[in-house]
Image (cartoon, rainbow, N blue to C red):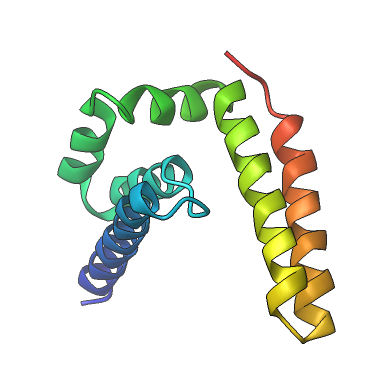
Length: 122
């Protein structure tokens, strides 16, 4: 019973991450590839068939494999992510009144950007 519950939760996580990745195709500030990588990771724990489909995908499969094998993030993805985080920061400054969100979210995005740019590139 416990193993069945774990499998269902891993599958649910994989589907949720994949859905966010698909939404990211249309929403500029929501990244697609990190969510697809997350979906493959969760699928590997509860849905091996989905994991294999994601690894075999012509567009996202190479990104997933590069991340798993070498922790690689392509330069183009780094640039896009940095621009998206910068745009989000500007947007937050003009639309949010909570100082915690106006300054906290950009601080987190800055930390993510520093981490991202320290990852190896292909």
